[in-house]
Image (cartoon, rainbow, N blue to C red):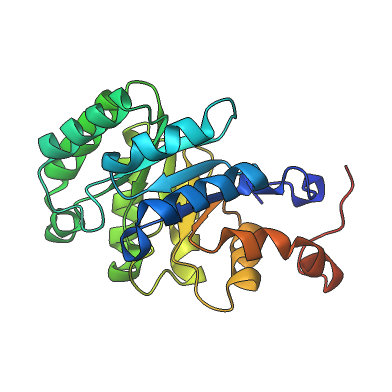
Length: 240
């Protein structure tokens, strides 16, 4: 396991989650409410769909250690690497300290690895030392494509390989394990998004399987489920 769940309790459990408010419900009112929940639950980041929304969340997260996080090239990743790098640079100026960048998986599927490698290089540079996460939407990929994409993420020095944008059907456990195994023994961690129903149980299964972070629009019930997950034996007892 990447995370020692015997050391997770109600005070630090929020750091396993990146809650988000994304295009289907991206009104400023809902984004503000989501950012306030992130503060209440002391999460790792709070994620919005583009740098446009950063001025809404940065003041709410100020004074906490919660990262204002912007998606880049969301949700399809089909813009050019230079366009995505410029979007990242703008996000840095607007106060983002973490980014969820969508890989051009069309280029990956076509075998145009140089395109992917170049956009990851430009993204890493534009992020200026802030936390980098790269989304692949592995539910559309073969196991070999997952391996190839994850390998390029690792070689680019990206902080997290992320399974999905959360806009489609989400990854299977088996697909996640393919990605996880490439990251093992490297500095690149794993983030799972697009967790299928039943969400609380499945989120904790991914954490038990080695995920470092869960990205979701349903963080609150997942976090609140920790005592029940321990009661039924899915999560090991707390040992401090």
